[in-house]
Length: 427
Ligand code: B12
Image (cartoon, rainbow, N blue to C red; front, side, top):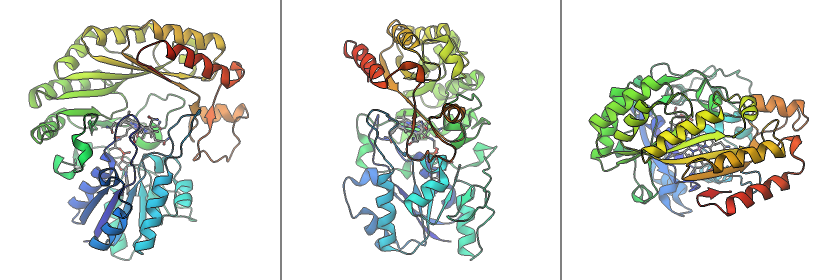
C-alpha cells in the first residue's frame, strides 16, 4: 500500500470550471487497488500558493500523480499556454519531496515525450490511467523497474509504450459524489461532468480525441449509468455535463441511456455534445423527456465541400434538420463554426457564415484556425503544404489556416463583423 497524492493542476474557468473527472477515475482505481489516496484539486484551493507544499508536508506521499488537462486554449488569435500552471505545480512538488512524479491526462497524452521533458516529471502514463497507474504503483512499491507497462513513458528511454484501452468500462470504478469537494461545485455555472463512453471512430481530420481515448468506442451499460446518476442527484448534483464526444452515437445506446436517466434520475438537467447526424424525432423526444436542456453541435462549416474535407459524415441539410429538432423541443443549441479549414476560400467562409445565421441557434462560437495535433490527417496536410515540418514540436500550439484565404486578418475581420451584430455569437 502506498500513500499517493493526486493533483489536478487545472484552474481554468474558460467555458466553465471543469472538475478533474479523469483524475477522480484514477483515484477510484488506485483506492480499489488498496492504496491510500488523497486528491488535491487546485481549482478548489482558490489562490493558495502553498496548497501543494502543505498537502505534501501533511500527507508525506510516496508517489504523486499530476493530471494535465489543457496544453493551450486553442485560440490562434490570442493563444494562451495553459500548461504553465502544471509546470509550477511540478516545481512546487520537487521543492518539497523526492517522491516520483507521474503525469497523465488528455493534455499529457497528446504529446507525452514533450510534456515530460517540458514539465520535468519522472514518468507518465499515456491514455487511460485506471489500469496502468495502480500497476505502476505496485511495481514502484516492490522496487521493480516499471518498463513494459501499457502507455508508460520515462524521459530519455524509448519504451515503445503501446497504449491499451479497457474494453469493459463497467469494470472500472466510477468516482462517486463523495470524491468531490470545493466551493466551485456549488457555483451557478458548474455542471458535474460524467462520461458514459470512450473512443471515437469518426476520424475528423483535426481531432485529438482518438489520441486520448482510442478509435474503438466502448460504453458503460446504460443501467449502471442510471444508477450512478441517481447517487449524484441524491447528493444534490442535479446538473450533469456528459463529456462523451458524441452523445447521440450510437443512437440505440443514446435512447437506452435516456430511458435509464428518466427512470433513475428524474429532475436531472443535462447537457451534451452532439454529432449532427442520425438523430430522429424519437431520440430528440427521449432526450428532452430525460432532462436535456442544452446541446453543443460542432458542425464546423456550412459548406458541403469543406465538411467533406474535414471527413465529416454529415451535410449542411443534416445540420439544419438536427438544430431544428432540438429548437422545436426547447433544448438550447450551441453551434461551433471552425474557419480556415483545408480548402477554405473567402467564398466558402461567407457561405458558412450565411448558413450559420440562417439556423435557429441560441449561440454560435466562431474559431479561426485549426490547432494542429500530432498523429492526425490535418498534420499530414499541413506537412504537405509546408505549414509544419516533420519533427516540429506540436506540443506548443501550431495552427492551420487555408492558403486559399489570403491574409488571416481578413478572416478575423469578417468573423468579428458577423459576430458583432448578432446576439449569442461569440468570436
Ligand atoms: C468534455 C470536454 C470539455 C467540456 C468540459 C465539461 C466539464 N464539465 O468537464 C467543455 C466543453 C466545457 C470543455 C472546455 C474546454 N476544453 Co475540453 N474537452 C472535453 C473532452 C471532450 C473530454 C474531457 C473529459 O472530461 N474526459 C473524461 C475523463 C474521464 O477523461 P480524461 O480526463 O482524459 O482522464 C483519463 C486519462 O486522461 C487519464 N488521466 C487523467 N488524469 C490522469 C492523471 C494521472 C496521474 C494518470 C496516470 C492518468 C490520468 O485517465 C483518465 C481515466 O481514464 C476532451 C477531449 C477528449 N476526448 O479527451 C476535451 C479537451 C480536454 N479539451 C480541450 C480544451 C483545449 C478545452 C478548452 C481550453 C477549450 C476552450 N478554449 O474553451 C476548455 C477548457 C475548460 C476548462 N475549464 O478547463 C483539449 C485539451 C488539449 C489542449 N489543446 O490543450 C481537449 C483534449 C480537446 C481537444 N480539442 O483536443 N472541454
